[in-house]
Image (cartoon, rainbow, N blue to C red):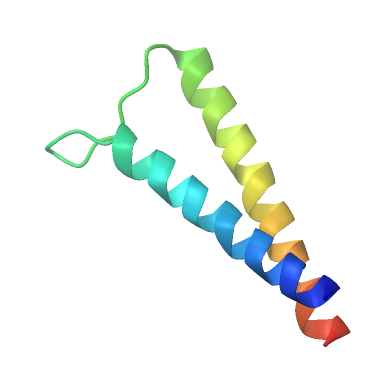
Length: 64
């Protein structure tokens, strides 16, 4: 049960990060931000979420 929850949550977090990046890109494929701090904060937040998702997936794989 715990492994299923960790797996689903890990993949959901990765999809959420990818969706945010997709909707932030313009027609040329460049990511657009309102300010430098928004870009920095977004990258830090998404990097942390990706690490958390990876840890959840590894935990789910080892606990199975």
